[in-house]
Length: 292
Image 1 (tube, rainbow, N blue to C red):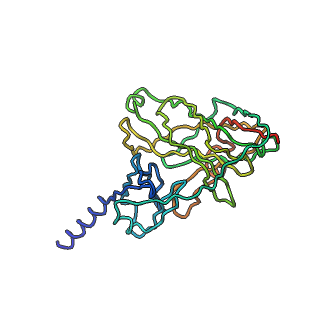
Image 2: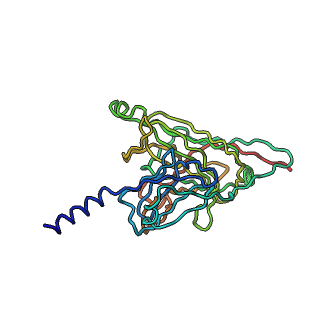
Image 3: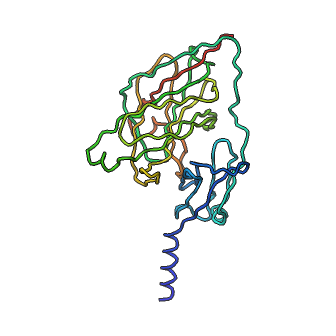
């Protein structure tokens, strides 16, 4: 009986395990929102106030990574992290440097095709990444703005009523692909997308990015929230517009980020998955052409 009681207590403690801490900028002491906190088995984001809640999916012996663009990646075993209530991240110099514009410049607008194209959605904590290889028409131009689209979500009236005020939180990322690795060089501020309505997102890149081979654009879902900004655990989706139509300016290759899956690649080629192939993100580009 004593053994059974101890076993029961141990089981309950495992099921109820959670650990809260807050992430702060070491220099400014400001909270860091929507930071990725993960192991090879699971992962979460900090909330808008920099607070993190680890659940029982985080095993004590696992190595945890805390990662945000602009800061040094922090790694430690979960058992050590559990003992802390505050974690400071140190800033680092960004790999995306400023570009000095010389000579005359001209804006080049490339409109995406098929505005009513197919949509693609995934569960929270996934990301669609489109590798863009520009041809000679736009190679070595500078990226100024990116526009992309969320299709109108169709459903029954009761779904609209149940999800009134609910929204998804996304952000836009830019990567350089190097030998199969995706190195993040830019991310936008998080933006809201409501549950049903069609929406166009325009990202004004605050630092010019050179359009060159293996540049990649990512649309990352941070989570699904209710009207009072509480994270919801529903495994629901929101369609990002995609298309199969090609254009005269670049070739593309699509990847989906499959986070926190042990023994699997973090970024998987969409053509290797059992879904419709030949699709890529549908977006408009505003480029700056330099005439030296």
